[in-house]
Length: 128
Image (cartoon, rainbow, N blue to C red):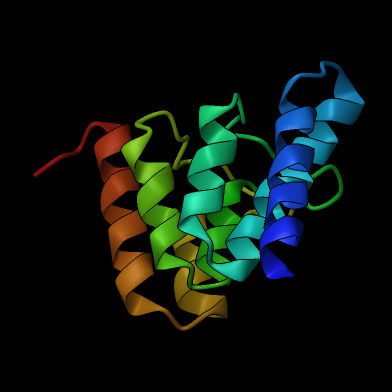
């Protein structure tokens, strides 16, 4: 019984990627948000492969997918986002926090915070 439910979810995610416009982008962001909150890197990768924007941001909080992954300590999802090599690590949410700050301050996840801080430094051009 769980298999048909998975197929329905997959069909819904595929349907979301074939539409265009602001409503489509919101639904796509919400699908990626659910994948991150569940810690499901495979589902996140599938949505991104079907055209999901890795730099999508929430309409109210302006939190990026990196912010969400950092807040949820979703290491698999952080790895998926990093592998795309398209992420903007220097984006701030509406409270002015970077993803690394969210990981360290709010989630107390030193591992994710350190990784994100390194990626931010690389993006700034200060690689070691």
